[in-house]
Length: 344
Length: 285
Ligand SMILES: Nc1ncnc2c1ncn2[C@@H]1O[C@H](COP(=O)(O)OP(=O)(O)OP(=O)(O)O)[C@@H](O)[C@H]1O
Ligand SMILES: [Mg+2]
Image (cartoon, rainbow over all chains, first blue to last red; front, top):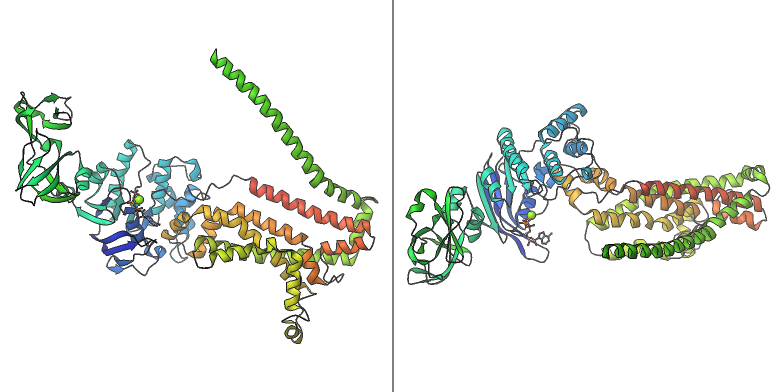
């Protein structure tokens, strides 16, 4: 089912904007990763979509229907909380079965059907035989999987996940994300996943939605974001960056470090920050001392001066000037107060 | 060398600690035995002074039976009503922020600080023959004061705070997360209360219900004022004990007192059982 957010805003009790005019369309079957720094409003946005908090303005449409008047329980979405929120007094099996047991009698599966669906989900979550345990007896990662199973039990068409893999170790995390993506495709789900993990976002999602300060900064496929990052956060989030301070004067960006070459740009005068991937930096002959570092992942790495690390693909490493170097930053992005001012 | 010293120091500290701990423990036990257990033992001893048969015989008096019956009926009613109201009140004050909430919280605690006699008098003022609603009630032939309904009202008033008081802090601590999880899973308000909120607070609820029961069984002051002390009709067990005692029927008085004490002991035991189970951490995991 499609999810359409139109100009969502939400104020906290003190009147401050937690969500500020967020508009986003998510198509049926799409997998969107919602990323952004802590406090950006990711959880707040999921809660508005789920109906746990009311928006102060704007509309939430699911499958073309305006959800604004419906309470959370009537929206039928799957939700996994940032801190699991399992029912401590219920066994794992009863936790998973909860959404089925509270269905109206006419829609509720029989006892045996519920039991078999719970077993199915336990197997799926690689928790076979743990149905009788209580949440307090499980590890953090196991609890997260139970929370996921509980959300999936009613087969909701839309899944909202608030950092569901935070407590998993990297190996399990990797396998469960592939598994989740497969499940998403198999069940034809529409999924919004909040994550802090860049690898996870890039690997699992069709599209990233980046939030900051309650606003949706940018949404798009990873390569689009990589090509035109709207903010320095987007740039930072997507990979390693080198950050060079400087200023624009008369159509030229003049970097502060002496070993970086000026770059012609067409933006107004003023202070600016240039951000660039280490592998996008070209080395030319210049004044800075070049210190070779260990080669890693197909890149020869050099330290230029005393701060900047540059990655040079191994096959062009022989073209690196040995006498001394300067940085050609022509492939970087310029930002002012964190916002993109131009692609160079 | 230094490690040995450290261990020795710790050892001496432990013995010093141990001594003072033992002193405190002995003191606590002496106080408990002297102030709490001895009176109860004495009551049983008085009841059995002329043998078990005499004690049992005192219960064959119809007034005694009527007192026991009245007490049990009043207790069951008061506990049922106040449990329901107490749950609703606790739920209301923890889940919703509304104006006047603080005042409501303070009012719920009022019965704990008001003397039961004053509470009883208030009911008499309201519903007694000379009271505000007295004439109206008399015209409709409804007896409240000097009749079981008055006793029920007095008991309800006195026992109102216990369920709310024990439940509120736990519900506060439980927070909204479990209930939110229930609601996104499709559970309605009552389903959430029944399946999530209350089970999460089960031990506190049990404790509150048992406290209510204990207080309802033993209430004297408020009931004494509204009941009119009519033997066989409006005398509960505590009132009947007083009547017997004032009439120099000491074995009967202490037998009834012993029975009341037995109820109380049972409740304390049940409460220990309810509280002693593995506590549910905070309803969340
Ligand atoms: N109940 C609330 N009352 C008032 N302010 C709140 C409330 N919940 C969140 N906020 C504020 O809203 C902003 C967004 O919070 P939110 O929890 O949505 O951030 P987040 O992006 O999920 O962060 P994190 O990555 O740390 O989970 C924060 O500034 C926070 O202080
Ligand atoms: Mg969050």
